[in-house]
Length: 303
Image 1: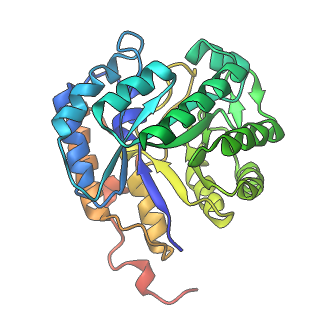
Image 2: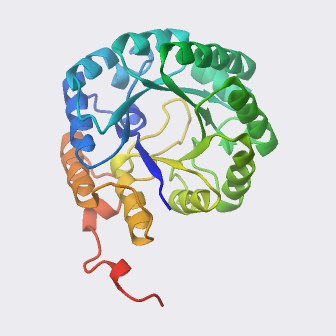
């Protein structure tokens, strides 16, 4: 079994931090992550720097990255066509369009109804196909909303079906506020397999279920898992939404389960420790504090 781990620390991770990093330092962060073997890094978000100052200067970050490591694909997050225009002009070849599955959250986050966001997604998917840009869609609040409570999985699947039919390359179900449990994840990911698209998941560890959810998602056929170095992150527009599952915690679990990631865990741990110094506070992740188990349990008999 193989899974693609997408690092979202430079975007989702930093957007909830009190300390604002310069575009140059954010580019350095991405470069360090690229050396760990990560194949995709969500590097920037093309949103208003006034509303989310942590993400200001996305174009400067991309310029500072230059050609970078050819083995790493940098991805930009967008919320509207203006964001897509900005991303396209940087030369990035992969984008993720995000919106929320509930009306209240989507209105607060994007000033649009869910139907309006789906319509925008359709337009951007068509444009991306013409421009040769890979376009994934993230459905936020797929399991629960801070304003409307639990979300009907049938509604989420109906949205995913519309986006798949429109030609999205990838569908990501995001547990934006960290309320999901394995039972919910199992159902949503299993049912999404019929879409015939690459299906992934984005988990937050707000209530301690993130890694368990990731494991179940894999069992049900998810081919993509988002994670954030050190477990940093959260949504500034979702009250109480804390960090993502930590990349190094996820990679440790996958590695010990014999699941291929192509990522160097020791280098990940090194980046997490560097980031702790940069942000000047302990991170939420656990493995970066203690390192891997030596000798690895994978070398021991089962039982």
